[in-house]
Amino acid sequence: MRARWKVFWVVCACLIGIGIVFCIVGAGMGATISGIRTLYGTDSIYYRLNPYDWDDSIEDFNYYDSDNYVQGDEEDVSSFTDIDGLHVEVSYLEVAVRQYDGDSITVDTSQISSKLRKNLFYETDEDGLTIKTKNNSIWKRVGRNDTGYLVIQIPQGSSLKEASFKIGAGRLEIEDIRAEELDIDVGAGQAVVRQFEAGELDIKCGAGEAALTGTVLEEASVDCGVGDVEMVLNASQKDYDYELKCGIGELVVGDDSYAGLGSTRSIDNGTGKDIDINCGIGRVAVSFAKDM
Image (cartoon, rainbow, N blue to C red; front, side, top):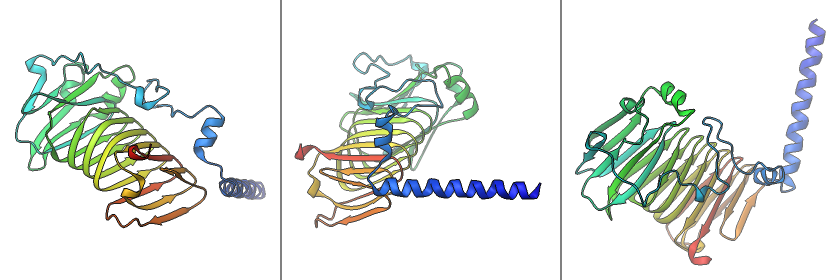
C-alpha cells in the first residue's frame, strides 16, 4: 500500500513540474492570461458570488438611472455635514456615488431591500463618515436575488481629504469625485469611476474588474491579482515616472506592452509624479487621453 502511495505522489509531483515548465515556456513565448480568455471566449469575468450578468463592456453597465434618480423619503435618507472623509466598506451591495446641488453628504437607503437596511452601519469620527455592512451572511443570502442599491450624494464641486471604497462581492459606480487621497479596493466585484481627480490614487483589484477615468496629480499605485483594471488618465504618457512589475499577466501602459514571466521595468521621465503598477496574472491597461 505504501508503495502505491509513493508512486501516486511521484506522479503528482511530475505532473505539477510539467505544468510549471509549460507555463514558463508559454510565458516566454508571449502567452498572456487575457489572450487565453479571448481565445476561449472567457474574456469577461464571471461574477460567481452573485447571479448578475456582467455586461460585455464594464464601462456600459449602469444599474441605476442617475438622470431620473429621486431621493427617498426622509426616514430613509441620512445627512452629514462638515465631513471631509468618506469610507465605504461593503459587500453584496450595489453602491452609486453622485454629485448634487446640496451642502451635505446624503446616504439614501430607500432602494435597499427592507430586510437589509438595519444591517447597514454608519459612523462619524475625526476620519469622516464610515459606512459598513453588518452580518455579511444575510447580505450574501439576500444578495443572491437582489439587495437593491445604496446612493451616496456629495456636494457638487466639493473635494474630500480622503475617500476609500472597499467593495467585496459588490458593485460600485462613481460619477465624479475629487479627493486628496482616493482608494478603490475591488475584491470579486466590479467598479466604475467615470471621472475622478486625486492627489494620490490607490487601486487594488483581486478577482474583479475596475475601470477609471480621471486625473492623478501626484502619484498612483495599482495592484492587480487575477482581475482586470482599465484606466484612462487625462495626461500624456511622459507626464509620469513608472515602476512596473508584471507576473504572467498582461500590462499595457500607453504605447508600451509588458508581458511574460517576471517583467520589471523602471522608467524615469524626470516628472516627480510616480505610477507604480504590480500586475500578477490579470490584466492592467493604462491609456492617456492627451496621446489619443
